[in-house]
Image (cartoon, rainbow, N blue to C red; front, top):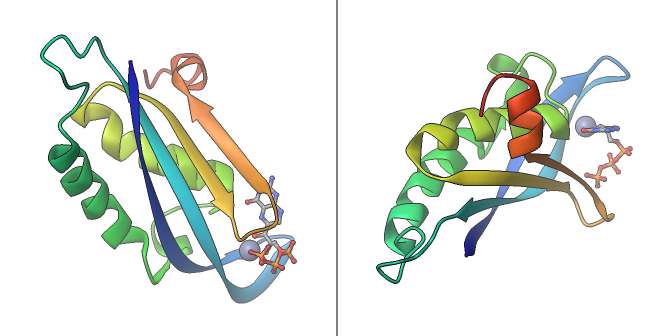
Length: 116
Ligand SMILES: Nc1nc2c(c(=O)[nH]1)N=C([C@H](O)[C@H](O)COP(=O)(O)OP(=O)(O)OP(=O)(O)O)CN2
Ligand SMILES: [Zn+2]
């Protein structure tokens, strides 16, 4: 079974093709999978605490200060790197604004990059 947590954060960044300092609002989803034999994949409170710690680092941050090329793709990788050691993470999704654009980084991507 799978559980997920959604969260939002507002950031500033610069990209080579969009060099001026500017901001975006992002929504992310983090997905965990496990057998839930005791009724839980991950207790919701644990998930909320872990996610909030990551969200706080991103929210109102200047992303270039700690993500080299802060595209949605690399934000998803950055979230993966922080949450993967803490539980059975299988997927991170990051959506920019409300334009219907998003990225997904999953176990298959992490395996290919040696981060599973
Ligand atoms: N594959 C990707 N492509 C682009 C990304 C990305 O993360 N992955 N990011 C951008 C930039 O963030 C760019 O600043 C987006 O600019 P624009 O399309 O003009 O969007 P807005 O400034 O209107 O911001 P919204 O967040 O969409 O409201 C470009 N490409
Ligand atoms: Zn941008």
